[in-house]
Image (cartoon, rainbow, N blue to C red; front, top):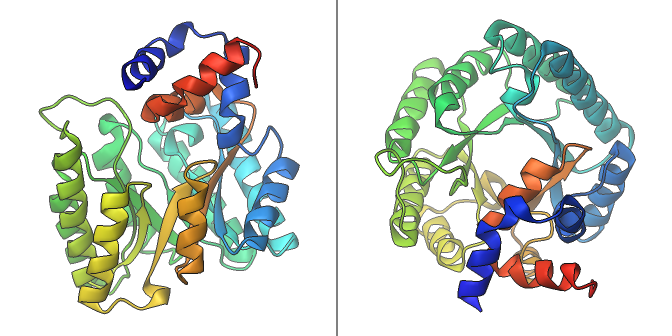
Length: 306
């Protein structure tokens, strides 16, 4: 079955989009902000926080960047208006990072100011593939000098990440700034010269990075569905005497919901990543490739079985 699921994952580019949409509905709140707000309200009722993501990275022109900026600002206003327990995640390429970095920075500043004006809502800069890693870190370092409500994502499958953490922590200490990191494994396809390829290597680097963040008392989003990493994180939390307000677990919408509920029952803060929007296909393909066990659902959908 595992072999079949992996074969299905590799064949995803040839699967009809209607099938991908049907299977990926569990990962995406819907097409509209109303859909996202309802999903966040439901998660809040279950004891979970949320971070909302407007789908649509790697855009082609700055008009799209402006439209995405306006959508992000609307998300922030809706979070405030509806008193949702949530914040915002943004992908810089959706705001023009790959076209005009100055224009992108202007868009991000507009989003951060809107967040501040609507209750100082937190905004997370998502990390994308390796051509953007250094530039994203540099922009985060620049932005956090003027905005306390911004954080970044780092990926443990990149060999460079322990050094990036050291540099961010040193920069924060030198400037009296709190470092706020979501640590995830990473899902973009990268060359083995810059990225670990085996599961154990990625796990080991994740726990190494987590230990560095905890030792420096950085606020940390522990973003993982991996039992090894969840248990490893719990040990590090106890080892470093981390309080409940100093970290949170983070998971994706529709993934390992029983584990999500168990962490909440244990008293941990937990945040769910809630993507929404019309540009769902690229995100869905990455999620399905990351979870080959979803192959069975694809087969059922193709056979009309739900």
